[in-house]
Image 1 (tube, rainbow, N blue to C red):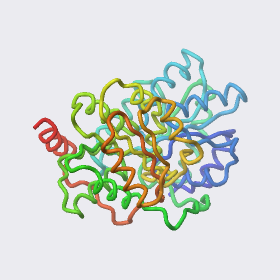
Image 2: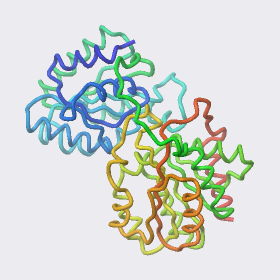
Image 3: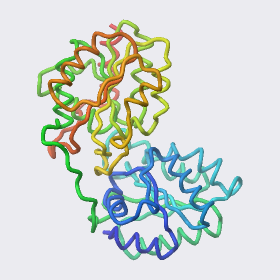
Length: 378
C-alpha cells in the first residue's frame, strides 16, 4: 500500500505546496494525514469540489506553484465547469493535479450510486481531455505517478488526474486529535430516532446521503416503523433539501421533512436561499450538525464555526430554531415546528461518529422509490 506520508513527500518534492478538496472514503487516510500535518495556508477542506478547483486556481495565480485538488469521483461533476471553463488550456491554462478516489471501479463491488459513476469515470476524464494515471497501491509507482503528474501539468499548463483504487493507501501516519464533545450530546442516530418518534405519523422524510440515510433506515427497523414514507438519498450529496422542497411544493398539504447533514448543507448552501424564498411548500429542514464529513473518514467541516441558523434567517426561512443539543429541548422543538406552517429550519448539534455495525438498506434505490411514490401519490 501507499504511505500517505511518503506520497505527500513525493508531491512536495515536485513543488506541490497547496492541497484542497472534499474528503473521500478511499482517500481518507491521505486526507487525514495532510489535514494533520499541513498548516492552514497549505490545506483547505472545501465546501464542494468545484470550489476546490477555484481555490487551487487562485493559489496558482498568486504563487505560480502547483496545487492539488482531491475528491471522490462522485464529485467529479461538480468540477466539470471550473475544470473546462477556467483551468483548461484553451481558457486560462492553469496547471493542477486532481486526485480522484475511484469508487465503483469496474470489477470492484460497491454501492448502487457508485456503480455507474465508477464505470464512466475514465470516459469522463477522456471527454474532458484530462490525462490520467491509476494508483493501485504500488509505492514506487505512486511516487513515479506524482512525478509524471507534476511534469505533465506544468508542461501542458493544464489539469491532470490520478485515479486511486480502493485500498491503495495505507493508514495515516498522523491524524488530527479527536474533537472533544459534551458527554450529554446525543449520537446522531439517537437524534434521528427522537425526531422520527416526535414527528406526526406519516410525515414524508427525505434523508441526505451517507450515514443519515443509513441510520434512518436502521432506526425504522429497530422501532418497527413503516419505511414507505422515507426517501433515502443515497447519492447526489447536497441535494436532499431541494428534493424535499420539490415534493413540498407539489404536495402543499403534506408534512415534508428533510434530514440533512452539515457537510451536505455546506456543499450546496445556495439551496437554503431557494427554500427560504419559496412562495409555497410546507417544509421542515433539519440539519444534524456534527462538524464532520462522517461518511468518508470524519474529516472536519466548518459548520460548527459558523452560524447555520443566522444563514437560514438571512435566507428567509419563516421560522428558525437552534442549535439544540438536549433531548428534551429537541423533542419539544420538533413537536412545535411540526405544527407551524411554512419553511422552517432547525439545527441539532450531535456527536460525530456512528456504530461500527451500522447496516445498509436492503432494498435497491428503485425499490425505495417505488414504495415511496406509492405512498406519496396514494
